[in-house]
Length: 319
Ligand SMILES: NC(=O)c1ccc[n+]([C@@H]2O[C@H](COP(=O)([O-])OP(=O)(O)OC[C@H]3O[C@@H](n4cnc5c(N)ncnc54)[C@H](OP(=O)(O)O)[C@@H]3O)[C@@H](O)[C@H]2O)c1
Image 1 (tube, rainbow, N blue to C red):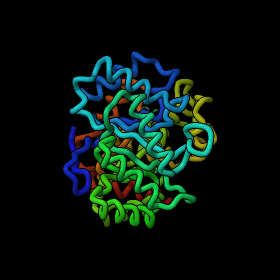
Image 2: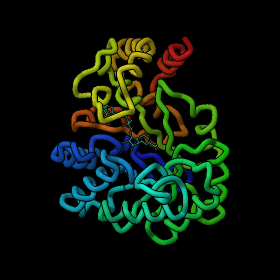
Image 3: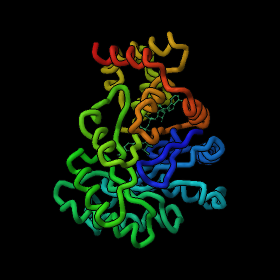
C-alpha cells in the first residue's frame, strides 16, 4: 500500500480506504465483515470510514464495527485511522439531524459507545446545515477535538465557499481541517469546478467517495444487466437502481472499451484515474466481499496512468 500525506498535516492515509456505508448493516454476513476488516489491515488499508447513520438500520455499521474491533482487532487500534460523522437524520425529534451543537456532540457520544472507542481519529460534519450558523457547527467540531473525543476535524460535502469559511474558522481555533470528503468518480465530476480546487487552495487533505460510482465502474453492469448480488438489485438500498445504471450505459461502454484495450480492469482504470490527481489523498471504496476489496487494493501503488490513457478518458467524457 502507498500512503499519501493528508494536506499539510502529520497524517498519512492509504491510497485506498474502506468505507462501511453499505455491507456492514444488520443483514450483512458477519463473518465476511470480519474477514474484510482483517484483510484490509493485512493489505495496509488502515483507514475505516463510518458515520452515525450507516447500516441499515442507522447505527448498525458502527455497532458491527465496534463488535469486531473489540473481539478481534483491539490490539491494532493504534494502527487504524477511524472516522465518523454526524449531520444526516439519525433519531426522531428536533435534535436527531443536521448541524446543531446539540446534535453533533450527542451523536458523537453515541458513535463512540457503539464502536466501543474512547476517541475517533476524525469527526466530520457530514453536510452543511443551511439553517444553523456555520460557527455553531464548526464550534461543535472544535469541541469534539478539544475534549479528546476526536483527534482531527473533517468536512463532508461542503460547497467551496462554505468549505473555505469553515477552514478559516477551524484554523483560527487551532484545529485545522484535516480533510474534505466528497463524491468524485469518472461519471460524476461536479467537484472539479469548486470543491477540488478549494482543497488545493486550503492545503487540506481530500478523500473522495463512491470512486466506483457505487459499482457501475467495475464492469458488473455490462449491457445494463443487473446481477442479483449487486447494489442496484438490492431493494433495501435506495441509492442505486436499474434506471440509473441504464442512463450511464453509453458512457460505461466507452470506458469499458478503453480499459479492455489497455488490458486493465475497469475498476483499476476508475481508481487510478482518481489517484492520478495530485489533490487526492485517498479514494474511499465500499466492498461487499474480501475478493472485491483485494481487487480494489491492487490498484494502489501503481505507476500513474499514462497521459494518453487519461486523454482517451477525457475524450470519452466530452463525447
Ligand atoms: N460523505 C458522504 O456523504 C458519503 C456518501 C457516500 C459514501 N461515503 C463513503 O464512501 C464509501 C464508499 O462509497 P460507495 O460504497 O458508494 O463506493 P464505491 O466503491 O463506488 O461502491 C461500492 C460498491 O461497488 C461494488 N464493488 C466494489 N469493488 C468491487 C469490485 N472489485 N468488483 C465488483 N464490484 C465492486 C460493490 O457493489 P455490490 O454490492 O453491487 O457488489 C460495492 O458495494 C462509503 O462506504 C462511505 O464510507 C460517504
